[in-house]
Length: 191
Image (cartoon, rainbow, N blue to C red; front, top):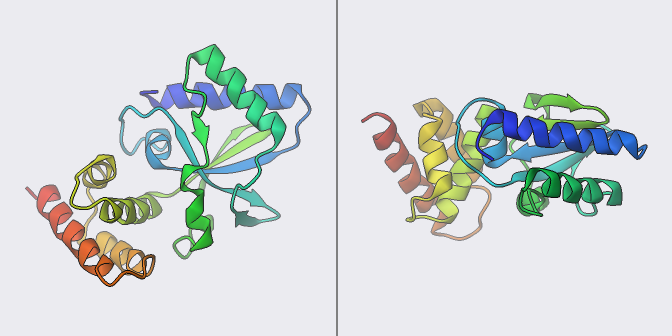
């Protein structure tokens, strides 16, 4: 999917399917390229939407077992729009074991595709999660790094992101990797 409207159409169809089968309200929280596209922050091709959490009872929890109706709807939408079968996946949900940046839930932007609601991580949280992911793959400058540069974080934003990201990996080398990514991003953004 390349554009915001591609993702909106996929989620609209998924919401219609869930409504047709009588599914109750479902709240998914999306990060990554799909969130960047849906928020209009970065426009780039991505083949999937990454579910990091679901909201249940006002709290964000790991999306361990997605409802069968949702999974059926994802397959139907994939077939009808010629998308990969895993266009909606829980790849980044492992992060829920370690926690999200403070205030993450309160900063979500919600899109309504009744009965489906899609929460999009804020720009601040996308900068933070992209920094963490870029450091995890460093020194490769892959999609996470490119997204981070495209977000053009200012110094305060990326330093705040670095503070949190350094707490996410117990390896003694990880803080240095974060610092290396921060330095490189700041150089690329300001040149």
